Amino acid sequence: SGMTDPNDDAAMSELVDRARELIPGGAQTGLRAQAYETGDVAFDSASEATLTTVSGERYTDYHLGFGPIVLGHAHDGVDKAARAAIDDGVLYGAGTTTLEVEVAERLVNLVPSIEMVNFCNSGSEATYHAIRLARAATGNEKVLKFEGCYHGWHDYVDVSVYPPADRVGERYPESDGMLSAAVENTLVAPFNDPDALEDVFREHGDELAAVILEPIPHSVGCLLPEPEFLERLREVTESHDVPLVFDEVISGFRHSPRGVQYEFGVTPDLTCVAKALGNGYPVAAVGGRADLLAQAGGDNESGVVISGTYSGSLPGLAAARETIDTIVEEDVQGYLTNLGDRYRDGLTDLLEDHAIDGRVVGHRSIFSVQFGVDGEPRTYEDVLGLDEERFRAFAAGMRERGQFFTPNPYKRHHLSFAHDESHLESYLDAADAVLDEL
Ligand code: PMP
Image 1 (cartoon, rainbow, N blue to C red):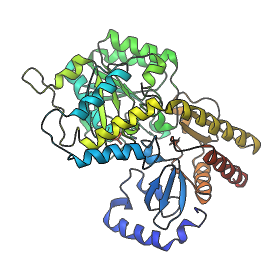
Image 2: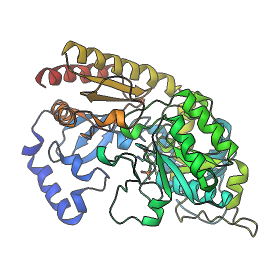
Image 3: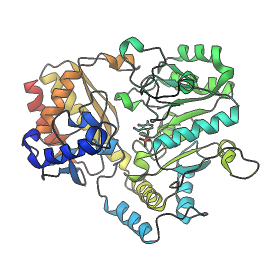
Image 4: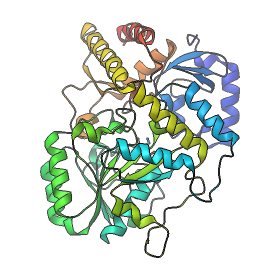
């Protein structure tokens, strides 16, 4: 189980060869080629904490679909709720539904900043809509984001997520084919730097439509925000009347059903949620101040178009309702925080035992091991020096021992409610063996 050399697997290689002719990079996932760095890989089922390949090899999954799977794969309750929605027809696109009201009520009751909410299907759509609402409300065009924060694939935000060391401080477009006017209107500042933030506001405060951030930038593992940074951010955006947007696409519902905005005591004007909201079903939302959301009312008074054929589709909303209720009722946050601490402590001890330079970072159900760096990372630049080769070797060794996570050294491990002591034990045993070989 997970012990064979993935490169020798004929069935898997045959499928991957076909995929590469039909699909750019041979897979839908954004990681594409990276997924294959440790050998051909093709999965066709998942249950609880386990991913199974087309050849029947089983892996404990720490990727969890990039994070949405907070309750575990093929969760009975969530799938039952979605199936009930399927039986009633998946999409009406024609008026109010019970499910949208029920999920909206939950979001408004739980998340401090959310007074009204609009549903969509992905995190990228949510950040796109948030920025459009903010631009409409302010009449301004420029958006400020932070190095190392990912907010989706669209041209407004796919800037300076992973700039190379010699492009830090610039507006670095992450993709070919982006609209230069969009990139020019996306300003970039270092995370956790209140002085740099105030410099941007001194120069551009009157031109800003929004400031957007991951309150914990998990796209580069885990940068915990300094309380002073979040406070100054809230003050300076408020005094300039610039909507503050928290992208809680990863943190929302995974770290807390109230969002980390509740934990940090800072209330933004707009909040984006997706991923763990639906335990893997495509459902997302932009919520926030009623006056900002009301711009999208669709009547003569409201000028913002938020649209989408599949927005509010019913299996996703049913999944969201069940996921939210389970997270709240079962104290998933408490369980995952405790389990995450045990993984972090175990890994930290192992690095020490094997005298390997590195650090373990994370928050609650998320953790990353970063080789060749030490100290608490606070900015994107603090992550830049990590040892990529060593992480890839670690990921390959762990995969041979049945532990699956992306070989991208800047990403993170996720835990789900289906992970338990037995997974912890086999993960740490595997890590012990792999670190011994590194
Ligand atoms: N924001 C954050 C913080 C994310 O991590 C992601 C996805 N990794 C997105 C936005 C975009 O979400 P989606 O992939 O659902 O479009």
